[in-house]
Length: 479
Image (cartoon, rainbow, N blue to C red; front, side):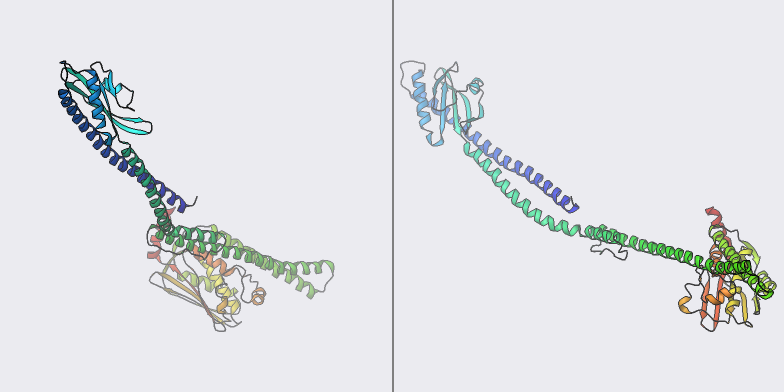
């Protein structure tokens, strides 16, 4: 059952119970008041009849000092006839409580008569043949006799009024319940609208519409729930997008990896088969062996880079303080093997907090990429400057540059802006991907600025001693 109908049903049940109980007590209270009034009236009538009986007994001519039974019957008949308009029935009994006179239709039950005493007046409600009566009993003293007077007065009207009251109240209750049900239906519909909107949003998101949001129609707790749901949906959509991007990146990585393996393997297999199947002259033999060696070295370089990326993704480093100038001297020592480009280094004195070998790998990869993008006699500049938060290093070239549309992709594994140039220099598109992972371990990132045809500037910032110490303490605490 829907929540809307549950609220509506329980509201109707509670209202029906409340109206039913209140109606019962109200109608019954009115009935009890009317019945008490009738009982009082019946007792007053009994006293009046007793007085009338005693007066009539004194006026009866008799030759005896004791009132005779026939006189009692005559007086009883007169009393009955005097109250015909009130539907009064009378019964008179002697000292032994044996009836002397009884009106037609008077009950034959003598239980009330047995309870009448010398100073005891009794009454009861009696049902007989579909009618209700108030039966009263009272002692009477006439001359020297102790008699008992009983009356029955019809009070069926009081009970009929009670039944009519209950019937009317039931009708009124039903009308009120139907009216309240209609009003509560609209109220419940309005109150549960945020829930229905949330349910619809949940279904649409489950169907794949991750950008769909529930409409907030109130500012109460349900409105807050809607707002929290939309916030959760935003986070979920972002997470799903990230997962989709990660899946796409993995698929691209696998495709690129397979492609990068295919090219050198094809060359190696082709030239090896040529060497195996034919007898070549010295120049062709050297060319074939050189192709095999070159492509083999490219595979080796690619495997090392891949291994480095995998290791850096899983490794935790222990940064140590070191002088930034050491990086400049290291690059100057290694500049002999970078090709025909000229390397210029300019490092300010300063201290960085890093894992030296990994940062050297980053610098070598950046310088290598800068050389590949530069002309044979080009210049590559590497500089280091102290900043307020650490030490910034930049590698700048004046080569071919990177198109703006390619900037976001250059750090992906196997991605190469100029594939023919990179392959000709044993490139596999893994250098920047490795740099990103190494800098991630140092809580840093690459910043790339480039203009096509003018060159590229790649930089990153390492924490200085003061900035790194709190970070190291935090890492130690987490461990």
